[in-house]
Length: 188
Ligand code: AMP
Image (tube, rainbow, N blue to C red):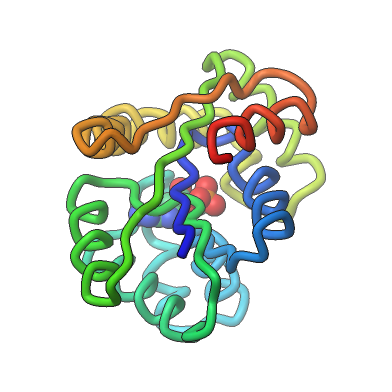
């Protein structure tokens, strides 16, 4: 099984590259952010809970997020593997993912971290906000807060995978195709 963690701050291009990898390797793409957004649209209890955090640019609590991730994986017992997009975002989530996958006799193949300078990231997210229906992409202050959350809670997840020799940093500046081929060069 190929289980790829796609990592990077907001606007790094995780969603775009996840779509490419999904098609290329025939994997299941799981975006926890997307699951939360769908639930928010449907007005489910999960959506109402997630909204309280997402509307302020905060991370949804680990316990909830880990449970959602597992539920989603369980829907695909015959998958070739998964792309985890936007998960794990804390060391606790990373640990939980390892334990969970080990219980299925598999593990994380590697973490692909998309590296992009912050100035470019904010521009990209604001641009996305013009065409997407993501309310958290409109407001620059909220975007800045998401970066703070990223630097405070998420960036250290790199160390977790680095210790396992599973961390691969990729230059995330360039055309979509250029970035895809850099990722493939690492994975192949
Ligand atoms: P994303 O689409 O990955 O940018 O996620 C949008 C928002 O959903 C984030 O800003 C968080 O509030 C929340 N979220 C998504 N994935 C996670 C996660 N793994 N842990 C905590 N919160 C998450």
